[in-house]
Image (cartoon, rainbow, N blue to C red; front, top):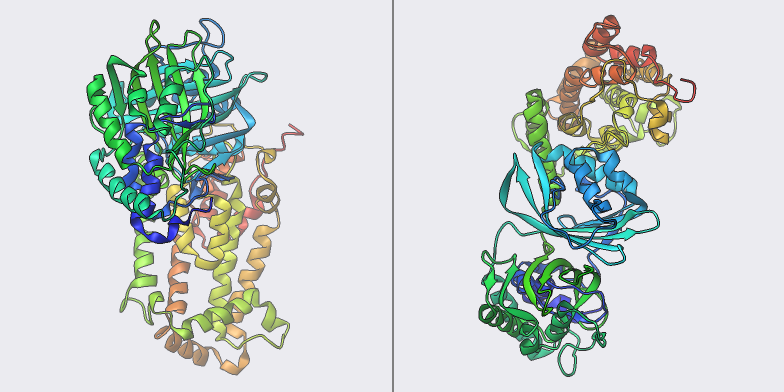
Length: 640
């Protein structure tokens, strides 16, 4: 979208966001949907990110740091249903939720089509493809309380079974959690009977209520008074409207009336004793009079050019239940950012009027999914294995001492961006693995040989952790993936190793279970299982030690070069941090050994290969190199 609104500050941004948030109603006709009270109150949280491009983007990872944390866990119990794909038989959505509640992610992912898309609105990006969604579900499972389940309160299955909407709440140990409800919309490939898309919208934990409307009202006055930034629409917000079909439900009529700002017609779609819950507010609006007052208040605050557009509609066979997936537009046919939502309505079977409404807009601007995922993962893993507090504490101390502190280690901290520090890092990088000086390349800088020796020993040690790449697999994803961690260790060493150790998923293999090489990706199986990795890095490390003692003879004998090296360390933050890294690597090199042996079918608890295990864990550097050379290979599924 090309709204000129962006450069006009927080109010205008807030307006766009708020409007989007305000959209509690979607319908599947292209007519702009009516406004819901709940979505409007969200206007205040829209912020500066109200860009005109759609907020739903495709992303292979899910962001990981992803992922990214919607509580999918929940019980597949359904208090009522509009229609089932087969009579008395659970729908594919109910089976999907049931599998998640049972922590059976492989089964849950089997209900998804290969190209399924998942918009978990606690995160910024849409997850595309069954494989990436499966990873997201595994990470969510590892971050949520074990007793957490999702309970389906209402389900609407469209007459042709292609669209399903659920209203749900979260329970822990069978007790419903306050402000942990939501609405989800699914589309289904009926040929495969698999889910082709899903959108999850949890209710906001805080209830801004009229505070959001106040911000929206201020922004709306600027927009409507100046015409700045938004499409001008003659005669209200009907630019995106289309003619309703003769058989349209009252929900569709409600959306249409909203977009025309005809609140009389909008309220006429509701029964006299209706209950309308806008999840931006703490309490439902009960009765037609209270609902009308709320809708009028919201309509006065909404820019005239904003319209609600229904993306998908699920109508039960008896037409007593309607589920809607929707988004907000400015009247020019393009979606506003952070303006999606999902709504559930219950209709009177006799009159067709709306008797209950439940509207949930997506979180705007600040999406906390990734933070929730990180916090939940840490809490679960530390609770199960308190020893993980050690790498967490060491990492916090390391980052503070090496990068931020003054006076603990010599030299200037990293925040001062001292030119000498960056020149030293550049020169060491050019002499990576001593290739440049050994070949006498003309551009090879002269660096103290003991510093070069320490640097290259450290990098060869870090490279050996690539031998544990099998720690990351499709059925065992880590919040901080192993491959980026190993790559990052080549640049920031312990700053990447320690958080990986704290966040990784432990192996859950039984005795005599094994992981097959075919379970790994191409890089993981090729590099991680390379039999010569340990010997190669041991050679580089040995050469680095030799260079430490005898490289660059112009630096004199051992006593002279050692004295000059100590003088260098006394003023050099980079060099002194390398010494800290060597100590940390020695302490933590064995943390991945036990699980790696289990993957190879070794009975660790039974004492099998005990000598190799001890060497790998307690002999710095060379013990790890020996382990990588002598450990059993992963089983080959094709030959077993």
